[in-house]
Amino acid sequence: MQDKNVISNEERTRKTRKALIEAALSLFVKKGYGATGTPEIVKKANVTRGALYHNFDDKADLMRAIVDQECAAIGREIERQSTGLSDPIEALQQGSSGFLRAMGKRGRAQIIVVEGPAAIGYGEMISIEDKYTRKSLKEGLEFALSTERIIPLPLEETVDTISSMLDAVALKIEHGADFGRMETVVHAVIAGLAKRADQR
Image 1: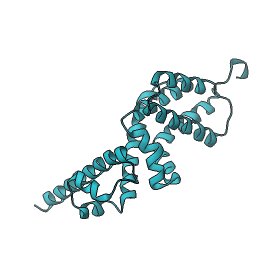
Image 2: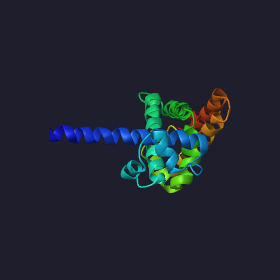
Image 3: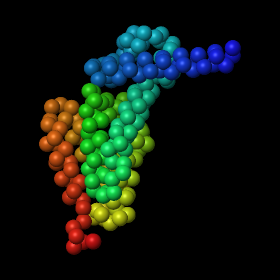
């Protein structure tokens, strides 16, 4: 009986966290983080205020959980698009396409590029992205550098530059820019990193 209660409590906690994250995500996308109050979140999630503070330290902690969840989903799509490709340039291009497609989920670019950094700070955003989206990009660039497929560039600065470009492009797409045209430009920029045959 005790084991069943433990499982029941764990399941209840999981469902409550899920409801709070989904409610907050919806409100943050619609109204913005700053304009959303915790009473609205708990009402939409149909839980008590105590349940919110039992599961999260505060509203920023809730945003932290949202960012982690969304970045993990984006990271999975990047991996799905780029895994198994032998050419590092193509892998980087397809990974970038995976990123942009995943960021196309309604409101996701707004959360990752605008609301998240404002809520939890740039440094913490980078720390979360380093576990997922930037991790994939860094690994792809490391592979391209190790195989001398791209021109020698400082790794961290290249990760920062391409990541910033992709964030900006994703936000533009969310606000109506044509996906295909933007994707073509991103692929061309990445192709521009490649070493020419006479440089190898």
